[in-house]
Length: 358
Ligand SMILES: NC(=O)c1ccc[n+]([C@@H]2O[C@H](COP(=O)([O-])OP(=O)(O)OC[C@H]3O[C@@H](n4cnc5c(N)ncnc54)[C@H](OP(=O)(O)O)[C@@H]3O)[C@@H](O)[C@H]2O)c1
Image (cartoon, rainbow, N blue to C red):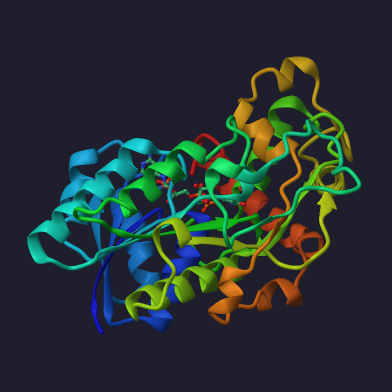
């Protein structure tokens, strides 16, 4: 089989790791990557980096706000994978409309794989640990409507599932929900560290300390970035072969079986490393001061300030195992992740560019 995959978020942490995996495992599929220039690198430089990691790739210039471009490119392909923003309704509408155009024009059953996240299943505990019998979600028989209404991803994920259940022009949708993605990405020139680490360290540089969401005793499950990529690949291969669960059943949780670590243990380690490097005056971490906590969105409080606990079952049915997470745990990965992040800031600071902007 061969064809074209339209990939959004190829320059990002999860997306670039998945891109490398696509190049190794499905090199016969051409990849079209929606890409923009950033403050750190021009579009040309980023195109060069992307091509270095995938032998069969072309770039379409655009942002997630370019709905018409996204619709046009989606209408040309049978597969779209979205590793960019989970909650960007405009771009997701563009993808689904484009894939419906494709279905109408060719009679094919296009595939849409979307990366959402465990933020959806938060208990919104505001930094408190899980109770004695915490709610553990499973992905078989799950609906986003089972989760608190205010949680991130609910609206967009329902929008996607609705598109899959339309009788006319329906698209085969698969939604992937990772926990905290960790590890160091291998795509040199692209994003190599995880979003949460960037959020904590960016705030630390602004505030002078690493801040926890309230007491930070809450926790979430995690997954190594390469296991995230292997999960997406298994979902894609199953969808191509017509074996995947899709639509209302197309819900795939992804996390390792590592014990849940309270956020405060992670932030203490981040604080110690940043302090030892001389980035911030204080080691460890402390609850965010009210003036700093007040700027955080409800979505951030849900995802980072709650307990996110799940039992991924569906991917196991397809033979997926979190093999890389078993080799390297999140806490053991942190020093290397921070080393990479710090090196990137130093390059950016020398260039006089804003920090951590991509
Ligand atoms: N990292 C985690 O621990 C984690 C856990 C659960 C769920 N998720 C979800 O998984 C998705 C990917 O996460 P990630 O860590 O890989 O994020 P990331 O490293 O920040 O990558 C985001 C990607 O989306 C692109 N993007 C974002 N906004 C864009 C815009 N307006 N126009 C064009 N491109 C845009 C970025 O392009 P640029 O490079 O040009 O900025 C980048 O390629 C996110 O939706 C995130 O919420 C992440």
